[in-house]
Amino acid sequence: MKILIIAEAQGSEVRHASRSAITLAKNVVAAENGDIEIAIIGDDIAAAAKAASAYAPTFTLSDALFSHPTADRYGAAIAQIAQQRGADLVIAASTSHGKDCVARAAAALGGTMVTDATACENRDGKLIWQRTMHAGGVAAWVAAHGSPVVVTALQSAYEPAEPTGETSVTALNIDVVALPSAIQFDSVTTKQSDRPDVTEAAIVISGGRAFKTAEDYERLIGGLADKIGGGTGSSRAAVDAGIAPNENQVGQTGKIIAPDLYLGIGISGAVQHLAGMKNSKIIAAINTDDEAPLLDYADFALIADAYEAIPEMMEKL
Amino acid sequence: MKILVPTKRVPDPDQPIHLNADKTAADLSGIPCIINPFDAIALEEALRIREEERSQAGSDIEIVAVCIGPQACEKEIRIALAMGADRAVHVVSDEYIDSWVASSLLKAVVDKEQPDLIIMGKQAIDADNNQAGQFLAHHLNWPQATFASEISFEGDRVKVARETDTGIENVSMTLPAVITTDLRLNEPRYASLPAMMKAKRKPVDISTPEDLGVAVEPRVEIISMETLSAKRNCVRVNNVDELIAKLKEAGAL
Ligand SMILES: Cc1cc2nc3c(=O)[nH]c(=O)nc-3n(C[C@H](O)[C@H](O)[C@H](O)COP(=O)(O)OP(=O)(O)OC[C@H]3O[C@@H](n4cnc5c(N)ncnc54)[C@H](O)[C@@H]3O)c2cc1C
Ligand SMILES: Nc1ncnc2c1ncn2[C@@H]1O[C@H](COP(=O)(O)O)[C@@H](O)[C@H]1O
Image (cartoon, rainbow over all chains, first blue to last red; front, side, top):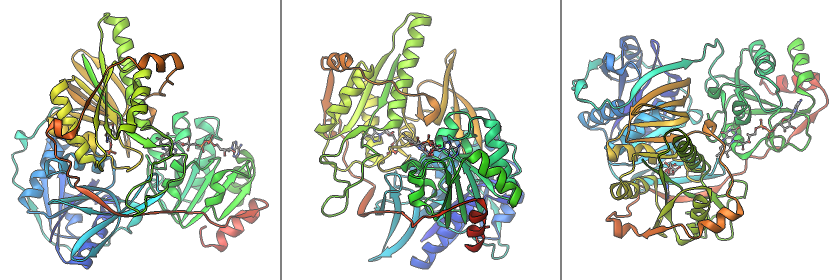
């Protein structure tokens, strides 16, 4: 089996989520045998490619046209790379890039795609995949018909792979100018934060609709997170109200995470929110309502007002 | 201009999931269903674009809802019509439709309908695939803007703000195009009772996958399903000191 990982660069490194995808690839190799290769597409990716080659032989497609991930161009490029490398299995991270560009590539490759895989197994000589559905309420085993199979790895289900020693970096030969280009990138507003990303933090302090303003959220949730070196998360309701940035959203339709500690403050625990955090190792909740559903999914709960409990915690930690 | 809005029927997420006897699908008998929330947002956006266009240019936009699924989808189709869609296309099938088959059927409908814009959900909240919009854009060789939180028009271009992992990304493209919706785009209106009555007279074009010449051959087959419960035994602590002590004891701090 030839496995191709579509990795994302983050500066001079391989993105954390892509390292989880590498772990999924290694699990496949353990279950079924196979060779792993990595492809990185972008502009100015030499350093990241070198970092990637410490996991597996790496192939690069580097051009100024790839400075931003527009789905038509990236999708076509990914599909061409998968064909050139003869991949039977294409694995990417379940990021917005994976869902946007890699899904488009999957269509060009025949439409066999498993989103958010959490496990794989060799059953009677055929690889099958586990994924959750219905906001995490159902775990399903699925068989993927067709080749290649395109899989996105749910980051929280896999520890990031560790480098094993530098291998090769090879430039791919693809006619970049001929790729589709009907989507124009205009601008991006990236967050300026020194905090670990919510998908990568070992501790996540998460705030919901209980907070009245963005300033309160930043001061209390952000402040507590900084105190203990954690990341910040939020419910959708807090995002909708403009209290928390959308990239902090945890849940079925946001980010699915499993940190060592998830502290949900002023979050009721709707099924859509639970889908994003219920696999965290330790879950604690602070809520004024003793009957908030989140409490049923928590290990510890404190019935208290967030505006009083958080400053006290910050003082005592 | 014509806007196509795919609308999938999904079980109400507030209801517990029951599985069928061989545990390969959710058993929807007796379970209330809704229009996939992201599709309701897509339809709402189409309605708002039409209202804006009417007041600005006085010209009209036709909105067509497309639903693939069993006969029972009729109810959700009527709701889409009552919300304001002009007419609907119902591709009737009792078979299991994955995102690939859905995108292939939608492609066939697009070939017939020739819309200028498709607005659809970023994901159906039953299977949580997040694929069909991207697949459809590929089939049509159209530009796509997924996870839209804002849509505006400028000349012949549509500008979309997209919610990504790292922030808001702004892209633009010429029509025809595919846009998939995120939650923040808008809050869908409710269908009023009088509108529900009026919707009964709106046309629904009924066809089957065979009529459209599309083979129902899912790429992703469900072998088995299992419902999950993640409930824990929650310890209530009395104060902040106790909470900190418990978290330290558990090795979480
Ligand atoms: C299609 C769809 C997808 C969705 N996807 C997501 C998703 O991915 N993620 C997500 O989170 N949601 C999602 N939602 C929204 C979800 O259904 C809930 O509406 C949302 O999670 C509620 O957020 P909340 O808990 O912050 O707000 P609320 O439900 O309003 O809860 C606020 C909580 O704060 C408590 N509280 C109030 N004041 C205080 C105080 N001073 N101190 C302490 N506690 C206080 C209250 O007791 C309450 O429990 C989705 C919804 C839909 C329809
Ligand atoms: N059976 C269906 N009928 C109509 N639209 C569908 C159907 N399946 C998927 N779609 C559309 O495709 C979007 C994404 O679905 P998915 O990729 O399956 O998560 C949905 O929000 C719908 O707009």
